[in-house]
Image 1: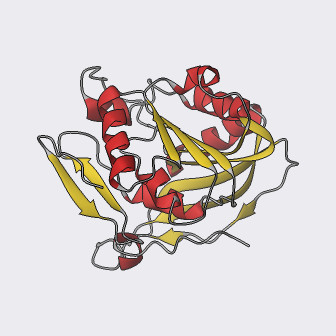
Image 2: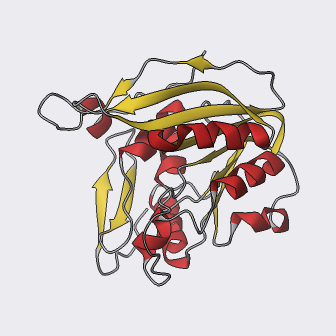
Length: 245
């Protein structure tokens, strides 16, 4: 479906079942973190899911190639990014599957009257330095807008018992992430780390289950760069969006 591009916007081919995404060079643009998380999320047919902090909407859009889910409600605090996400939903003709809500996810009860099967988020994680409250990129990166404790608390409230929460976080803060998840009733059940070509561990990707027993399966690390420092082709052009059995 055609949409009107605004200043700074461009359409990129996601090279995944004909999906496309509009990005704005003046805003925060998605990274391989989003692709990795979309690949890890295990949605089942007819699942109802919620995304916290959708940005341009790329994760929810990619998930549409993975399974015929019932619906995703995607919250975005920043009006400009929410508008962009809505355009991406329209661009990919996903209006019946994905709903963008321009509001703080803390207010989810104003929009949703049932529990979710799955909640996911690629949240802001920088907490050092100053936050420019008028800068889209700055807000998207700093966790003062969505502290980890708030994120985990909200996710637990959104989920049904046994529902799954997926998130990414810096590997340097993995102990904090695991502790905060457990503290809020979300038990890590599957997780892995990403590493670059220098064997530096960069990211932790976690699946947690509301009300589950202790015990986590640690999967092999995902190497995201080749020996020349370039992103591997699997992350650039192929997504292998398949659910776990």
